[in-house]
Amino acid sequence: MSTATSHPAERANTHELIRGRVMLGELEITVLTDGYFLLDGGAMFGVVPRPLWLKRVTPDAENRMLMGSNVVVIRDGKRTVIIETGLGNKLDAKMRAIYGAQQMLPASFAAAGIRMEDVDVVINSHLHFDHCGWNTTLGADGALLPAFPNARYYT
Image (cartoon, rainbow, N blue to C red; front, side, top):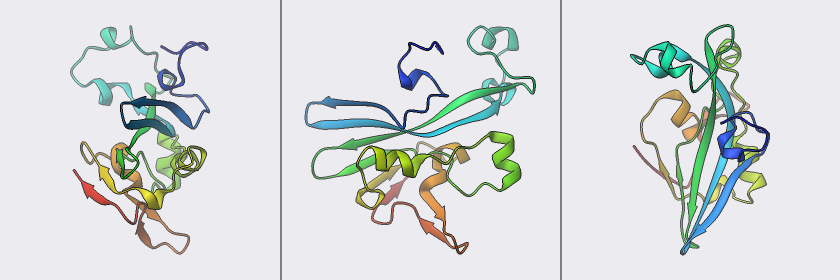
């Protein structure tokens, strides 16, 4: 779904930093973006034949499809838990160009009024680069630091 009237979470290329926010009982669930990136259609769909996945998505001239990079934040008033951390800021210039990486997660946290230092738990479903990139951050001096310094990390 990539129509102009669809929900921001359904549009990978939206410029909205907060993709959605809802209360579920005592839990506040917020979806933030690290932007979007481009991924080879064959790499994404593997053994699924191209004619089948073309019904769902249209690749660019280089066979890349637009993918949203979203982070789920769950807060209950005592704890802040996040699921996935996006692409991060450690890709070199060539890799950023290939993937079109956005590096928007810190701005998304700020827009949502959530400090990265307040995150207690980081959960990664797996450790592919597009799911765990902001586990650490590259400092201005080149040092590698935890992006969520007060969190426990789980995979």
